[in-house]
Image (cartoon, rainbow, N blue to C red; front, side, top):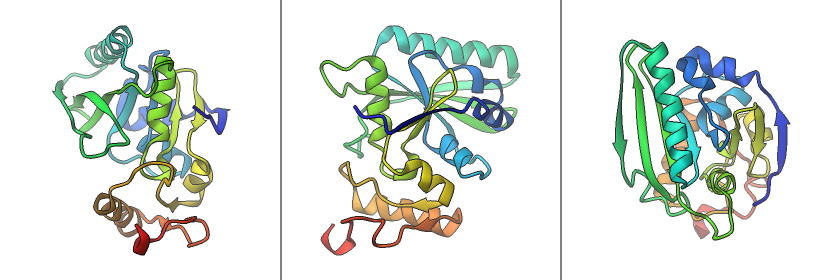
Length: 210
C-alpha cells in the first residue's frame, strides 16, 4: 500500500456536518470517509450524493463503526432508518465489498453508507485494507480519504490536484468497466461542471484501445 500524501485537514468535519449532521464526527479509528464528500470538499463544491465510510473486514471494527453511527443517529436524528445491501459493487471487480449498511436521515433527506471492504492482502491490517479500497476507485479524483483525526489521505497519484482543478479522469491502476466509466465521466462533465482531462494527463488511456 502506498500513501501519496497525508495532510491534516480537520475543517472537513464541519463541512460534512452541514449536509449530513453529527454523523460527520462518528468515524472510528479504523474507518475513513472517502470518495464524493471528500472530493467535493477539496473541489470547494457543494457536497452531493451520499456520505461514504469504508471499514476493513474485521468483525470488531465493523461493529464499532456501526455502533458509533447508530448512537449518533439515535441522539441527533428524529427520523432515521437503516437497511443492508449485499454485493452492491459486485460488477466492479476492483472494489470488493462484503456488506453495505445504509443509514437514512429522514430529516435531512441524505444517506450515510457504511461499506465493509474485502481483504486485499494476507498481511494487511484493517486500516491497510480500507485504504487499498480507496486506492481502487474508478476515478482519480475519488481516491481521497479522511480518518477520525482529520488527516487527509491521497491514495491515487494526482487525486488532490484533480479535485482542486475539477478534472475527471480514469484511475488507470485498476480494472475498469468501459460502459460504467463512460457514464461516470459523462455525469461529471455534463451535470457537475467538471472537465475531462486532456490527452496528455489521461496518460495511456485511449477509448479505441480500451
